Image (cartoon, rainbow, N blue to C red; front, top):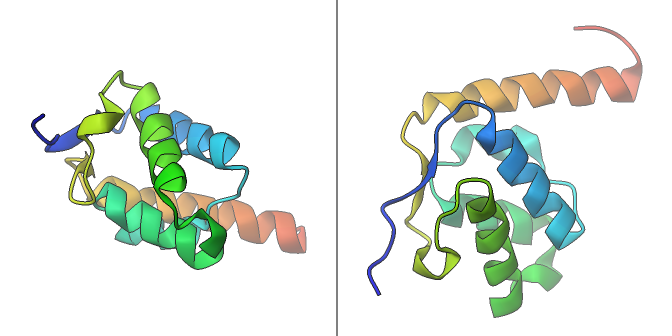
Length: 112
């Protein structure tokens, strides 16, 4: 089976759905401050296992891949650590900035 070059996220909001699916499936909250460094599925997985070492398993990897692929219909069995999430890597910097502002607003009650 040939590996996927990209999951196929388009940066049109499907990445938000995919990450929310991953959080729900894994039972975790992702650290979105890391998002600016998320280029590949392996980058997201590294962020997940830094915060939740118990998910450093084959089952944890498969659940992450399945959740990320569900939004776009990609085959999670073809995902590798090098599979690109979205071609426009700048979108992750914007995503990280947005969620960072939301997190700070929720934790200190002020608008940024």
